[in-house]
Image (cartoon, rainbow, N blue to C red; front, side):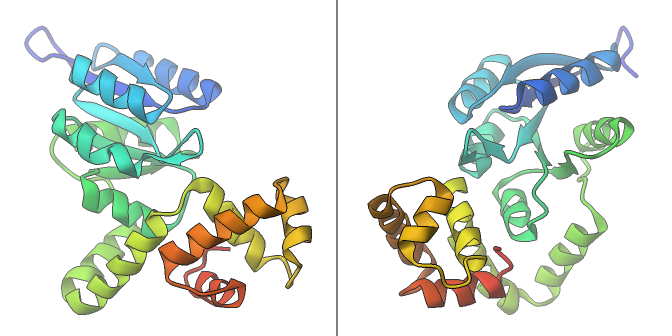
Length: 224
């Protein structure tokens, strides 16, 4: 609890969904005087600019901002000396683990109760990490078996390089039952040449040669 001698925890909120951003702001404001919202942002560039301008203690950061992964801005946010908590509806341990390696200090689900979000802010502000039991187990496993972890990290880096649109296309391929590119393009509401360009980029990033190899890779890494 903030007192006259203890300043409030200064929080920045980063989310591209106006309704969720509004709810988070009301939640943090409701915890006054212990916490204070000092800035909000809806895209990666704005997030970095506001963090450098306001120097928040905590950044609650949505993992997916306007179709782009917020992983790319975590290192820059860390440079502002803020402690990052990922706010995500994504349960992909690979992506969340990548966020932690880049400097995030905690992960909170978008479906978390209000008191859980506030508890995470308090703990991370106090210098602790906030992780689910599953994430903690995965991190301990990487310490116990660093060789296997290094191999997994390499694959995590490949997957993290995919854009949100590319991830949607990978998922569509997994569930397409071998549909032709023309049919798949119609399902995704893109032109067939555009789909081919996306697939070429995906193949290069994941190190696969064709849709069959992509299907096998995606199934193995649970990308569907």
